Amino acid sequence: MARSRPFPFLQLLLPAVAGALGVGLWQIAHAALSDDFRFLLPAPAAVLAAFQEHGADLGRATLHTAEGAVLGFAAAVIVSATLALLLSLSPLVRATFYPYLMILQMTPIIVFAPILVLWVGPGLKSVTIITFLICFFPLAVNTTQGLVSTDRNLVELFRLYRATKLQEIVRLRIPAALPYFFTGLRIAATLAPIGALVGDYTAGSSAGDGGGLGFQTIIYSSQAKYAALYATAIICCALGFIFVAGVLGVSWLCLHHWHDSYARTDN
Image (cartoon, rainbow, N blue to C red; front, side, top):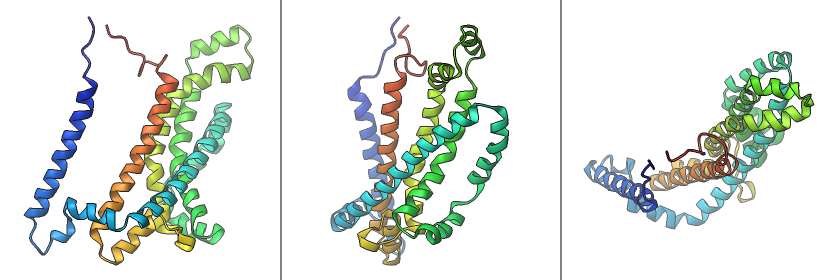
């Protein structure tokens, strides 16, 4: 018996209705506040006006933050995948280097920020490195776990047929690890805009019109432009959605033909 699936129209309509209700509740909450506290929650119309007033600055800052997020995210993907392959080759290698990954993850990024400014200077380089550090750990851990969690029966089958180590990795372990890899990728995609924003805030620079969204929050906060702060927050959320949507699209392309999370029957 085939399952009933929601109509594509409803899949678009329901989030739109929920969003409209959210904006309506936002307006009601703004109106319910007293005049002394109403500035803490600007009206939706005021935030829209801030988009129009500061559109040029916000657009430029968004491009700088997105650049740092993309560069840091891409570097994290490449380095973590390479390291995961190395860690999966031997339990001794994992026992040697895995504790240092934990130490790196547990060190607060705010401690690295002033050190990075001293090493590479404020601006895009520091923002990229901070984004890399935030995205790297979930990617490395999930990919390593996927590579070492391959079905033991399939591994023995490959060895029975005298497959080389390279064939085992390329044709068995890497495909089996893809769901783990994309899980880490989704986490990293959520963290990438946050990392770039934190990098802008702690190690960014406005030199050469290079200030990102984090740097803009400092400016708007110091000038008490609260509607502009809300506009900046909305843009940051939109960046996160774009990153995650891109990862979900790539994940679907790679997995929907064979993995259980996508290849579901209608019975």
